[in-house]
Length: 606
View 1 (cartoon, rainbow, N blue to C red):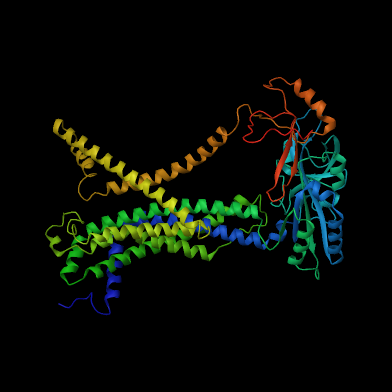
View 2: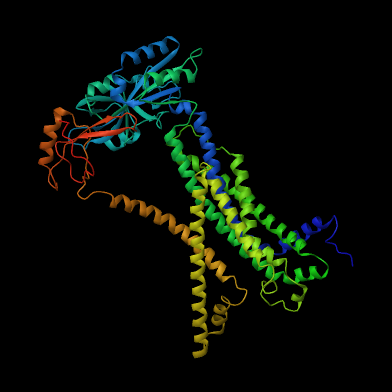
C-alpha cells in the first residue's frame, strides 16, 4: 500500500489530518485557547499602549511643556538672574525667542474665617504669554484673560472642598483674592514641579502680594521658551541656555519628560512580566490539553505508524495542531488587547487630556502574537517528542501510559526539551525588560530562577498531596465502605496517566502569581512603616513666614492632643558641585531620629 504521508504531498496531508483532529477535539482546547488569549491580550495591550503612549508624549512634548524649551531650577536661582544670564536671554529675545517665567509653590488657602485651610499648589504665570503651546481650559471660556494681581483661577476640586464658586473670595498668605473662574486643565501639568492637592492659578504680582515666597521657601521655577519662525534651532537655543544656566535642568520638545519616561518604563516592565506569567499559565493549560489529547489519539498514531508514517511525520501533524492552537489563541488575544488599549485612555484622561481614545501599535501586537505561539509550542514540546515514539504494538496495549513505550529510549530528548523551554522563556523575559543588553540577562535570570523554583516547589507539594490522598483512600477502602463514586473519583486523581499533578501545579502557579502581587504591595507598605523612625511627626506645616512663626507656635501650644512640642526647622534648596542636588536643613541641635556615622554635628549654620 503506498504511504500517503510520503512524497511532496506529505505536508498537505499532515495539515488535513491535523485540521480534522483539531475539529474533532475542539472541546479539549477551548479553555486552553481562552487562557492563551488572555495572556497574549494582556501582554499586547500593555506593550501596545505603552508604545503608543510614548509616541503621543513625543508628538505632544511641546504642548506638555507649554513651549519649545524649558529650564527648571529652584525659584531663587531663576528670580535673581545674573548679568550673564540676562545677556543670554536678551540675545535670544532679539533673535525671535520669547520666554516667560512660571513659579510654583504650595501654601494653605483659606476660604473664610473659621474654615479649615486647604493645602494648595500655587502656579504663577503671565496670562499674556502663558502658554506658548496648548491651551488652558477654563470656565467660563477665556477666563485666563481675567487673571490679575487680585484675581485667581481655582481648580474644580478646590472649589468643591472649600464650598466656593466663581465670584467668591479666598485668602492666600493673609491676602484676599477674587475667584475669576475655574481652572479645568493646563497643558503642562506633567511638567510642573510641586503638585500637591488642588491647584490655584495666579499672576506673578499676585504671588508677590501674597508674600509667601521668602528666602528658603519651597518653590520651583521654570523658564519656558517659544521659538518663532526664523529663530535659532532647538539645539542652538539649548546650547546657549546650558552655558547660561549650568546648574539647571533643561528639556526640549525633542525628548519625552524623563520622569514620565522612567515611570512608564518601570510600569511597562512590571505589567509585562505579570502578563508573561499569565501567558505561561495559559501555555501550561495548552500543554495539559495536548497531553490528554495525545493519550486519546494513541490508536490513531499507532495506526498511522502501521501505514508507514514516520516519527517526524507524526511530530509534524501534532506540531501543526499546536501551532494552530497558539496562532488562534494569539489572534483571540489581539482582540482582547484591543479592549485593553481602549480601557487605558479613560483612566489617564485626568492627567493627559490630549491623549487619543484609540492608538494601536502593530509592532507590540506582532511580538505578542509570536510570543503566544512560541510559548505554546515550547510547553507542548515534551508531549510531542514522546508522541514520536509510540509504536504500533500499542494497539494491543492502548491502556498503558503514553510514556511507557518510550521509557529508556532517547533519554536526551526530555533534557533537550527542558533546555529549550527554559531558554525560550528566558529569552522572552529578557526581551520584555526593555533594559540594556548588560542588565536584561540579569533581570531575566532572576525572573526565570524565581519561576523555576516556584514551579518546582508547587510540583513537589502537588506530588505530596496526591500521595497523601492515595494513602487516605487506600486506608479508607481497607477499613470502611466509602461510596463507590467518591472512591473512584478520588482514585482517578492519582491513577497512571492522570494529569492531576500538572493541573495542580498550574493552578498553584496562578494562585501564586495573584498572591505575589498582593504580598508585594503589602511588603512595600510594611517596609515604609518599618523605615519610619519612632515618634516621627504626623502633621507638617510648610513655609511658615518669619512674621507668623511666633503666632503659629502659640497656637500649637494651646492645641490639645499634642504628644511632643513642635520642632521648627528651616530648609533651603542647594546643589553641591560634582554631586546631585539635595536639600539642606539647619537646626541648633541634632534632631531626634538622626545618627552621625562619621564626623560630628556641624554648628556652622545659625
